[in-house]
Image (cartoon, rainbow, N blue to C red):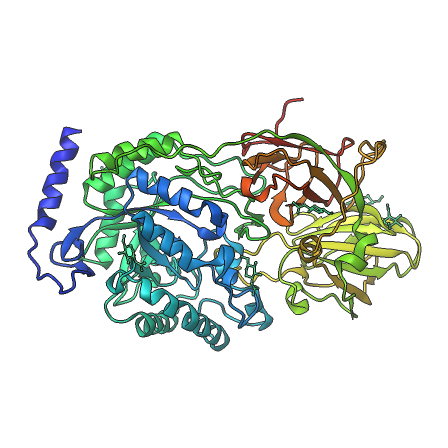
Length: 635
Ligand SMILES: *[C@@H]1O[C@H](CO)[C@@H](O)[C@H](O)[C@H]1NC(C)=O
Ligand SMILES: *[C@@H]1O[C@H](CO)[C@@H](O)[C@H](O)[C@H]1NC(C)=O
Ligand SMILES: *[C@@H]1O[C@H](CO)[C@@H](O)[C@H](O)[C@H]1NC(C)=O
Ligand SMILES: *[C@@H]1O[C@H](CO)[C@@H](O)[C@H](O)[C@H]1NC(C)=O
Ligand SMILES: *[C@@H]1O[C@H](CO)[C@@H](O)[C@H](O)[C@H]1NC(C)=O
Ligand SMILES: *[C@@H]1O[C@H](CO)[C@@H](O)[C@H](O)[C@H]1NC(C)=O
């Protein structure tokens, strides 16, 4: 460590030798190109930052997570603003409740944390469509992340709302935002459209002024740095523990010959897709590489420091060789766990930071208490085909050929496509999606009896039997839009015709399903479990709803919901959509239930939509610890 400290002195000497003019009023934040560092209030400044996404944490825990980051010794946080979270309907903006960006900035400021803001408009983030609103896809040929007129018009209107809100929060204006990122890893996108980046630069300067530090972030290759950087936007780089630091910062230097070294995304962990092994990144590697970067005088943001949860339908997806959707947990193996608990990784990072700056005195706040509430019995409410009056109050839209989610203006969740069998099928007859047009999973029933499923890129044919005139119900699940790469125009639903034997299926009734609206409105009315109802003789198959109540017990503590032997679906608790479960595919086995969602006085209502097969014992388990790795091969 002696060698490390000596080096540190040498590097910092360069920065501290600066004797710039002090800005009147004392608040300034800028780049010192002469001495290769940031300047805050005229003095050399190095940030040690961590990423945290307010959209992935319940608001009542925002302060708790921020305090833990501050107590680790961080002096800044890095925050994405997801456009689609704030403008779900074009022209209608929401900045209240869990979308209250200014409250989050205020809490960070009160905690003593500076903010590096990443307002997109595209953010990636393993978030649904990389933060872009799905209503953009109503223009069928829109070229996202380019100078396309429709795209530019939409984002300009959005930034005209967002950036004026942000402006008073700039450090130079009395707030805590020291720098603002333009776009995100634009160099990884095929379009490489400098006119688009120039337009963004103009907008950011117009709304935020000439003095704020604007920057870009790109992956560690020349191609990415070439397409992602633009004059007037300070070029930074991102890389994880397996990268040669010297080479990476040399690359940043080729694009930014003078100025501070910045790793905008130093990966402390990694994400999981359904079907992956649970990703972990070694604690020793993270602390060693962090120490090396700080020794070089670099500014570092740890991505993620607190990952949180993809509640509801907010997870993104990747599409490289095939579509792969991101799991509900965004724990990320980060220093603070999904439930905000300090981990060994956090303590190791704090020990590294201690060598570089004074860290706040006082204890690290403890983990929030967890409780194992035990088993909750569920009761079947009904199958989805029998519940259409409740779930689709406006009724179906009729169409000769299938319409997409975007054409139906239902952007998330589930829709049901219904038609009738055109002829008798006494023998197994293939139902085919010849153009791979099922986005993303289709659960097929005939007269309410489940037949099987089609899955994008993997299962494009299944067998059906039935009689002419039988009702065919196809529930289609949107598994989250692609958030990275060239396939982000990710339309959902049935994108092309289905063929049954030799017939193209036509004359559809398409039911938009407002499951969240129904549940928020108090459906399904709680029924006390009947003694006979909680155990089935035969497992139930096909998309169906189940509900149960957890009796209040004076404790509203965090807990983890395990759906052992359930197959795949979605869960709500007291009207809040906790996200998707899929223990059969894994790796995630439990869903995080934030304690404040639970009532200490009223029965807690749990609703489960199981899409495939419920277990014989209709029950779920609330346990006191997460299980993010599985499936359990034992038993
Ligand atoms: C805004 O979002 C909050 C959830 O954070 C919700 O309760 C509220 O109804 C929304 N407001 C509008 C106008 O949609
Ligand atoms: C941020 O916090 C500081 C005190 O820590 C306070 O002086 C300042 O007014 C706050 N800024 C805003 C915009 O609330
Ligand atoms: C990193 O790259 C530099 C320059 O190419 C090389 O000298 C050094 O040995 C490499 N370090 C490691 C740990 O591989
Ligand atoms: C689905 O629900 C409806 C309405 O409750 C019922 O009539 C029908 O029998 C159910 N179908 C199956 C296959 O259970
Ligand atoms: C469909 O049925 C045919 C004929 O019975 C069979 O050969 C084929 O394997 C089945 N296909 C699927 C996908 O089950
Ligand atoms: C659960 O639902 C029942 C009615 O079905 C309602 O009386 C109760 O308030 C709900 N519980 C909570 C915590 O909202």
